[in-house]
Image 1: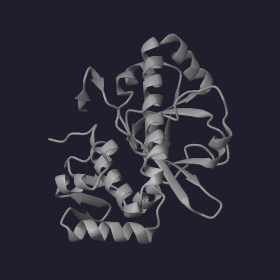
Image 2 (image 1 turned 60 degrees about the horizontal axis):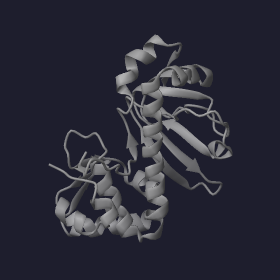
Image 3 (image 1 turned 45 degrees about the vertical axis):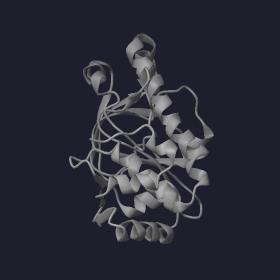
Length: 237
């Protein structure tokens, strides 16, 4: 992560992973249940509040809102080494509209709220890390609310591709492992507008599209289409 001044700049993140991996031995020593979720399974039933908290050992979950008209808005992805949905005491009504589903086979450590509360109250390092994690999550939501929501679809697409390069886990630094449907659902734009934007970037030799992947072949050219709020925190080598 790039730094500016005396502290790190938190970039908006869509994929959360490895945020709690240093606590894995500690989690194993605490009361928990080890569970496996098959691809496509819900981590908890839709239309219910969050009742369990998971440390993800392997696999990836997708968190999204599904509207009555069938439209899906992806909020975030959560991979190995992180905790989701985090810890809080309240049951928020909005949670009943959110769905978390395994998009690959997953293995997790599952905790009840009471079990996690004990860890939160007795482990200062864990509680501090949870606060920092929520700060990152809120930062991502504020970015979308204050910035992405008011931009046209092409600028949203360029911003998202640039940000995903800094958060996805592909071995190839400029390859983004994501489907085009997921991009549309992350941005809340139509497939028609997404196709038009991707075609424009391809025609300028900025990207190549592959099955479930997008390869950025001219990062400086992509950056020219991004907003300053997106560009300033990131660097690539």
